[in-house]
Image (cartoon, rainbow, N blue to C red):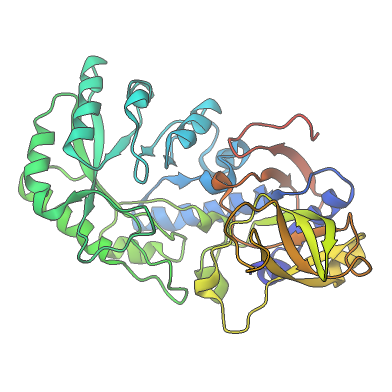
Length: 405
């Protein structure tokens, strides 16, 4: 549903992506990223964060932990990163970046603790005394003191995305924090949650109940003598949300889709960040009145923001002129009879016949990407607004693909 926004605010990216696909420089099932737009978006976020006194950890899972994009945001070897899981950490460190925050959504598994502690992340999130004890034991063995964030929870008021719940209950926080503070090898640096801002709201930033839980936890820790250095409040973050997060008491935030210009807020108003990603694929065959396009990258999470009667569209053509003019309806992927997005997305489905949507035609779409849960490639483009240059094609682990040069 970001195609119209791309057409209006970053048409150069659409032209560059279409041209690369038409010239067979990039394969189907590829997200194309405008690294210059992302750098400008990141600079806008950074300027606002600095004005408000907020610290940044950039989320890179959705862009395939891409090293060119990460460098544009943090500088070469930067540490302003958040690793959701071990795959994130491996990709980031394998490309020479440091670890800022790891473990908010997926804690560090036992087998990986020695290696991760040795990489000296700024903070590791823990959901329990048991996990904190594992990290403390290893940090003490390495002669380090590792900073921890306590993931806190209050099920009576918190909001969780499916399968992303967990944390130290507020009722148990004081006792648990005292026990963790007594462990050699670790230091409590603060508290975290997810999501701190609502994802269902596209009009203005609205805190979830988790934010209240976060602040209550901060006060509990302060009350027992813990110096709270971080109130980490991630989720749905962009330059537009930072004033709200700072006013409510956050110290650290974790922009992800914000630097891509693809948060819900970007659909409702023109914000400092412009959309910086699109998806390219190709017509493979036809079944009845549907054109099947190569899939692998479909992760469409927009239904909650759709206006009634909204129809998703795709650009289709065999030439640049056709792409500029020709639109078909995008029905979905996976289970074709439902038009949904679940299941194995070998193909996506468009309206069109072999005459109107021929095999081999290029297809360009605009939707939010989550590369870490797809099989999509990542192509990075510079100079999209003028003279586009393909800087490389990568997999979702940030590895350059020599097949496409």
